[in-house]
Length: 264
Image (cartoon, rainbow, N blue to C red; front, side, top):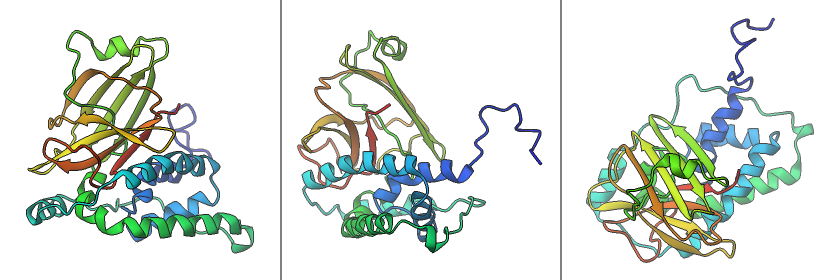
């Protein structure tokens, strides 16, 4: 019997598992999920082409940052601060999904999942040291360096004919980014974002089709921020964030903790 509470509610998601898995995809690629969440994502990917496409879209940006990263061991006090701030990743009451019958599973998809799992395992150590806490903050982030344009507003960029808007929420933190290539401007709004530990900053990087990345600036440390930045977007296809020494780095020194493709 249909629940009458949802008959006229256009926002009701008939598949809460799908929405939950989409929230986990970026963390899954970074190997920053627990065992239950990993199984939930992998089982869901076997039957959801939309989520598989999103994984395929996010993967190149993650790999580009990994190739560009220069290994660096953070001070012991930074590691302790990061690990101390980690929120429990599991969500009470999160929907569970049982595995589909083996006879209906696609072996090629299983092989692909195994390859992704091996790739993530190779990144596990640096993620735990440098990026673990940031994964729990929010899944989408947008460009927020100090190169501001005070005479412009978020509404100005949103009014551009080619404006693209990206939004996400994970836990209590939310982020909204609006990109206009015609204006060569990016607007960002963050709410309830936990600051980086002392001595560290979140730094943003554009990812490009050839696999390279370019500096997009250091993020402000405010929990709530709204700004418009004038930048040269060039051929950027996405943006990623890493945790860097205070003030930023010339090249990434850690794995990306958040990735946002510029794709509608």
